[in-house]
Image (cartoon, rainbow, N blue to C red; front, top):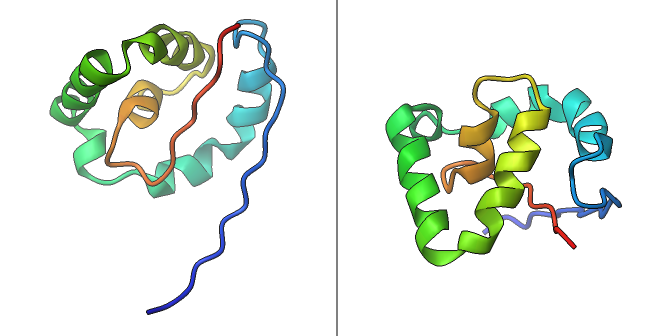
Amino acid sequence: MSQQQKTFRAIEVGDGSDGRWAAHAQPLWPLAEEWMTEESRTPEGADLARKLFEAHMPELVPVLDRLARQLDHPEVETFLFSPGSRTVAIGRAD
């Protein structure tokens, strides 16, 4: 079995509404697109992922919606909500 190394970095984004998160995430978007699976790129995959968030972590849905509105990419909501992507971007609302 191969060993993988991951690096996590925290950034201060406040409540996610002032653009700091978008300024950080915008240049990383091309990398994020590479991590998305085919399933996560479909409307059905996005709907399923959203329903799972609504059922199991409803407190995150408004945060993810707020973050998604800041990026100008059609698949950003699918990416943030999708269990099929290989990364998850979550902000914390205070």
